[in-house]
Image (spheres, helix red, strand yellow):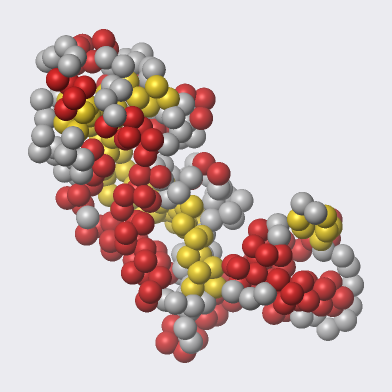
Length: 304
């Protein structure tokens, strides 16, 4: 085998994970011409074709598949080596993909994360707010804020915060519909919730905790869409406190009778948790979430 161009492995990984030269180039902050040249050089160094090219993008060949795990392992070890050398030796660089639940991502982390990005301008931060489309086990994300802990695999995980959810209704809806005085009254009202066969974690399946057997008559895969349907006066909806209480037109319904509790877990592969590229973001997420305990665990100011 010819001299192996180790530095080109980051280009290989980017193309393998993105599927297109242009996407890989954006991720690496370079041009697609540079990415193509590095892939070609890597294939020449290895003496084998790593990708099948087509109008739809780049797909791994059998040799490319074999190279993936060693390449990922080398990327992890490179991060560890940077940590040994010292964070102050050079600015942190690379790509970090963070997977978060939609509500937490849009209502909390979307405001916080730009501060971290400004502090580390050489890092590319990718926040995926549709958690069900990425898999930590398939290395499609580096860090995850999750509603549950992994059932198998070698992971670091920690409970960052409990958060409270309550039933909410709009002022308009509650004013024009029968009064709700006890839990049993809830079953006669239409509910907004998740599409049942698209609920990707049991922690989102909480309508049965409101009233056993309760089903949503208006279903959407997005918590933000559920919030808007509730504000539009369709019916009642279970929302995190920090989302529902932020809307002056929403009122919590029987919050002392029907509280629901969930947890936000920070999850990362054991071999990444101390990587120089990853550790600062882990610490940032932990610190910001811990500081917002009252925001996550609050009790509604407006309720019936």
